[in-house]
Length: 322
Image (cartoon, rainbow, N blue to C red; front, side):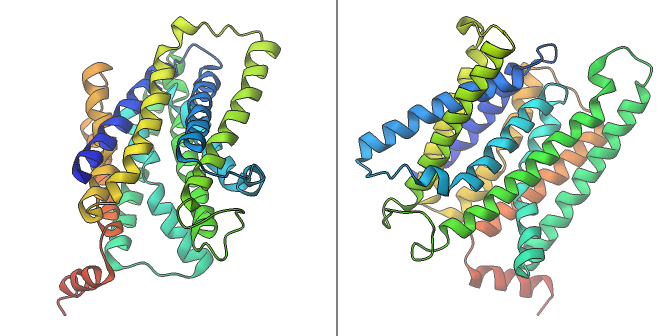
């Protein structure tokens, strides 16, 4: 069953990316904020259902306690939606998925933790891939410098947004590690071993719901933008698939993590395939090669995540021929 859950997460998040791209249209100024509203709405409903169905004695003070982590995740997602207005999904998704590499770099800088050889190789591969994608995107912008097409004029600037997503999301993961490292040291209150992660996730989802309410007030009441429900299908579907993928993700990693982790980590491959089929996206050969480097690095990190220390040490010895 764990493999079916891993495959489901791979597909769910890949499909969510497709609808995120369709929902964040270039000529709609606040499309990224409208997407955030629907994601917050679906997550908020999910949080409330989790509390009711699992019978969790949730202390709402945890919303404030977990706020630094929640805001990192939410801000990264909003920035990612904005970048999708002008950037191909085939480029954006792999960069955003590289957040694991940035988290590892943060661990080196802040906690002085040196990762294993495989992780270092993966970080280097991802970094090279992202740098090359930036170079190719800048070249594309230069080639279209005189065009009136805003998409190409803002191309390199838009390229920075998935990088911002990657960095800020990594900060969220880094802070998450502090909050969820040990139940004895966590600042979260009224938690048990069984509800530990649920409380953190509920706090994040309820925070997203609160942010969605403020965004709705800003977009609908202050900016007088219409939010016609029949036209929100793509944004609503993106939110539903995102949340469904989060549900199957937990069960996938509870099985054979060494296989499930790289399958899930490579969901950007699914995003790229769907973008090619349904959005007719076409990248240059150098761009495809750079994207491939990022994906390979992500898969290596995913494999390492699912391995125990003994297996990692054995592969490290093999690399150094020891």
